[in-house]
Length: 178
Image (tube, rainbow, N blue to C red):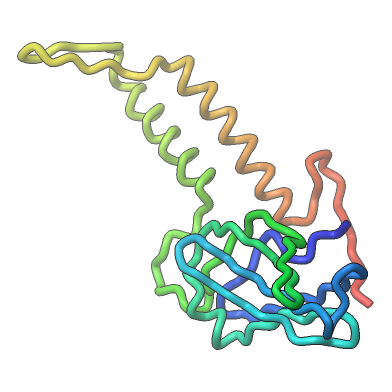
């Protein structure tokens, strides 16, 4: 069965999802969505023929706090409550509402930049550890930093490929909207 709630919702944009559930036909059944995470978000469906339309106006989603949420989508009829779907959804920040000068890098990009900075500083330091006044400082071995760097390079490349519409095999995915 196809997922009703998308993996990402953008704050500041209109959200709309139509659920056609043959076992829970509207208007006999109603559908509700509860998201819990950085905030509590609740939506109730409106019947659309025999389906359920979940809508949130852009003005409502503008107040959504970004972050990872758990959700449950439930069908209700005469005191009977059934879970139709559950999972996680990432609410993305409203880009139009972000202040100028913000750091728009992904987590993987930030970590990769930090690893590179540590490696660059390490070029002038050859001590693995040192002791001052009975305190020791151990540095991460360069071999471990290079392995970590390779991991994050792969993550950043995968993110960039995804943003370009390429899959992990480097082939472009083309879509035609009807």
